[in-house]
Each structure stands twice: as C-alpha cells, then as structure tokens.
Amino acid sequence: MTRRVVITADDLGREPGSTEVILSLLAEGHVSATTLICVSPVAEHAAQRVRKLGVVPRLHVTLTSERGVPRWRPLNGAASLVDPDGTLSDDPLALGARGEAEDVIGEAEAQLSWMRDRGAAPEAADSHAGTLYGLHGRSWLAETLEWCARHGLAFRLPRDPEPYFGGPLPPQLAAAHEKAVAFADALGVSIPRTIATNRRTASELGGYERLRDDYLRRLAALPEGTSEVFLHPSREDAITGPDGIVRTWETRLLRDPVWHDALDSEGIEVVGGWWPAREGTG
Image (cartoon, one colour):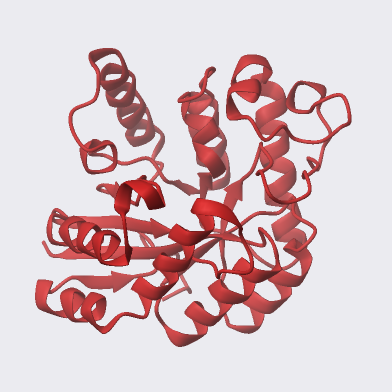
C-alpha cells in the first residue's frame, strides 16, 4: 500500500476573488480537486469555468451563509433552514438548533440536481462549515450517508479523525464517529483514510512560515491509503480580516516549492479522489 493524497481547494463559487484563485490553482496543477458552493450567485460562472478545465468539482453541501459576503438563499427554500428573510443563517449553531432532516436532505438533493443539470456529475460530496456532522447541534450524518449511498457518492468522513482534531476525540464523539464509519462501510460509501486542514487563526499562527510548517508536519504524518488535505485559498482583496490572511497564506503554500519538494520527498502520490474510479473515468 502507498500513501496518496487528494489536495482540495474548498469553496469554489464563494465569491469572485476566491473563485479566480481556485481556477488558477487548478489550471496550474497545484490542487487536484475542488468543491462547489451551488447557492452562491457566482456558482453559475464558476461551474462554466471549471468545466472548461475538464474538472468536475465535488458538491459542497451548503446550509449556512458566510460572514463578509451577501447571505445566500437555499435552492429549495425549506423553512427550517432559513431566517425570516429567507436566507441561510451565517451561524451554524442556529441551523443546528432548528434544521429538520427532511429539509437538509431535500436541500442537498436540490444542490446535486443543480450540478447535474449543468453537466457536472460529482462523484463525492462534503459539508460546508461541517454542518452535517453534528458539530454545531443536530447531526444529519446518518441521513447524509444514506443519501450518498442512493446516489453513489463518496463522502468526506475521515476513517481516522485524530489528525483533523489534533488528538483523541471525547468518548461520546468517538463513539458517534465509530458508528458513522461503520454505517458508511455498510452502505458502501467511500470515505478517506484521514483528513487534514488548518484550523488556527492568523493570530494563533503568527505568520506564513508557521502555517507552512504545520502543513508540512501534517503531510509527513499522513498514513497509508488515500487521505485528503483541504484548504481554502483566496487572495487579499477577496476576504477581509484574519480569515482572509490565512486563506492568502494557503494560496502561497500551494505554489511554494518547499511544499512541492515535500510531496516528492515523502513519496506521496497526488490523486483526484479517495474513491474507486468509475468505469470510463480512468
């Protein structure tokens, strides 16, 4: 067995600046996958552009808005997902307190249909802001895995969660995770060996070199099998505040020769997905 990694740029379609950065990184070969936010006004443009690159993004199931951009609206408008003005809340805890499973899966279905209607048939899905996992209240993980199984989709659920969380899970969360992994296996939903990303702020990191060193450490620690490293690259004028600083650093990392040298020296193969290739897709 060898070590493989999917290098994913999350949030294609979030807003124009991040979208342009992600498209450039895909064209340059610095990332091997991306995820699409279908509820954004930029999604249509992003879908057209990424299709020209020959890339099929994963579905980034999006149930919340983000601070700093105009609030998004769901595609099916289910009452339990929205604020009184019909927009998705930018607070995952608000969604976690009120979202109904039927509405959550209905919105995921609508977003998947949106992609398929535009000639993109994603092979996997994941969760924007982690809302499907129950980290902010109600969990819809079981329903999501059943939905993935119905559509033949892989899903971003790490078989080993410790690299993401930075250590062992609390007992209750560990038990829920173990149950979810077993359920994914029983349903035949492909999941990655582990996942890794940056979860620290710009002030906690202190500078670009600290972020790079942290990613290099995570890269070296990847286990056998296929894992995923996902980032949120952007540029300075696209996202204001500390979050924008970190996203700009991640763009820099993906073009950094030190990062590429580490991939080579570690002997890690970069791949497009952690799931078996479908017939006819190579």
